[in-house]
Image 1 (cartoon, rainbow, N blue to C red):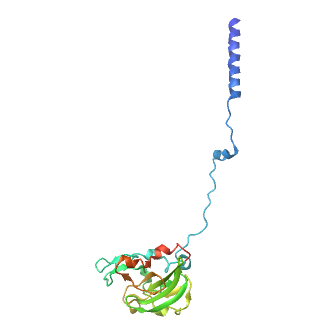
Image 2: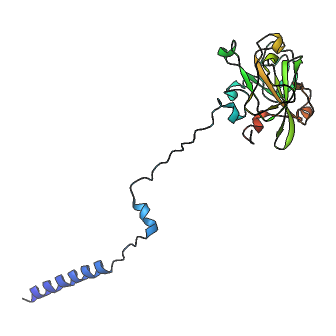
Image 3: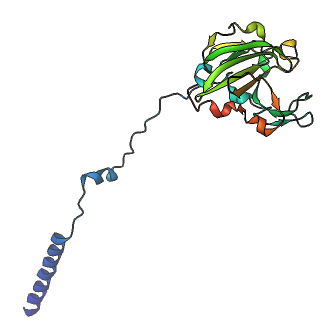
Amino acid sequence: MYKSFIFFGLFFVVVAAVIYYSYHQPKEIIRDQDVSLLSTTSPPITQNTELAPTERVPALSGWPLPDALKRITKKLFGIKISPENSPVQPERFSGYHTGVDFETFFDEQNKDVPVYAICDGALLMKKWASGYGGVVVQGCVIDNQDVTVIYGHVRLASVAVSVGQEVIAGEKIAALGNAYSNETDHERKHLHLGIHKGAAINIKGYVSTQNDLQDWIDINRVVGGHSL
């Protein structure tokens, strides 16, 4: 009898201790801002429906030719050219290249390849010049600075704009001359594009020193950097 009393007494003590512990156990409070952490559903993925500007829309890109970056493969801005090291052989020029050469693709050799104005501005000059064949010059303002833009190796007969007329960025300004003809002064079919600082016309394709090169601007530095 005495042992039974002790057993039941211990049993009630244990039960009471369990109830007390459960009741007084601190509970985690879930605040409103923490509810999202409990969710097993990932947030919805929103896709950007804006299409990246394509280089096949010259009016929007500021480049003179479609797929422009793929065409810069030989003569970059500022490269020092000599008959020995030139990526174009045979080479008759030497010095620091004042512009960027945009090459033509294989299937364009016998096609009309239009050249588009890279900026708004008046046509200042169109003529045949040694080293270029056909060349046109446009006056523009880039980053609040007067510049002249040189489009070299073009077919003059394709230039529909008269000197003094305004040309809008993205508008066709000329077409490339035929390879190794008088239209390109017997150079390959390509576009030499140079940007010279100031309103004075300077169509040099090469300069002798790096100091002289500071009077020119690399088109890669300005396209996309302002509202061409």
